Length: 250
Image (cartoon, rainbow, N blue to C red; front, top):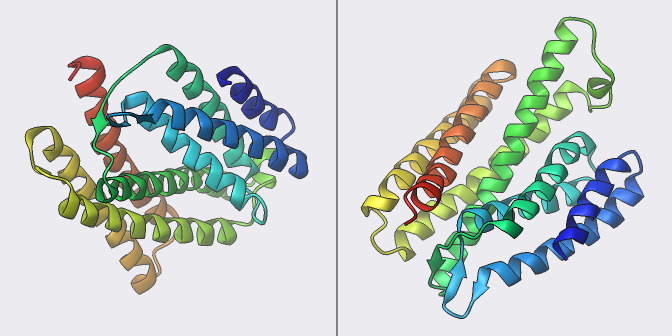
């Protein structure tokens, strides 16, 4: 099933110019990916959110959100980036095993879900910011390449970016709240840096949204704050899991 899922993700890239084929092949790929996630994550003793399982679930969420968005919005260029990454992660996940078992009670499960949704949305916002920066650079230098010409207008891209950031910020807030309520020893040694960095990232996105709606922040300011917040957030989550599971083997 892993190989078939990988092939479907790659076929979406091959036929990216055909919207209907993207939606059909992407739908099958995401459905099979969801089955793989269930098989790898759900165990008799709890949820296994080891490094590669967590990465796989996050890329699945991003791919699913992009596919839904593709029904009405022009996000093919983001799909060209995300779907090959999803294929690579599934391939890596098939050969490497990491374990991080969490109790599958309702509160913890909602915290995990809200965290994954938040990270996925803010990941998309970071990719959107990168495309926005490239688009802005090309337009100011008056020689836009074909990829940039295929993107929506700059103002539409920026509006979509703030919509994604606002949704991601809401889910990140829920993640932090549920973490405080449902996670025991949230400030224990192995979670302290993750918690602190998540709060810093939340603050970065809060300031960005406040600056945009209060003072009309746009352009390069938006791009810098978005990428900074995303980098801190990913460092807090995947940086800690990388060190603990793959280096220290804890």
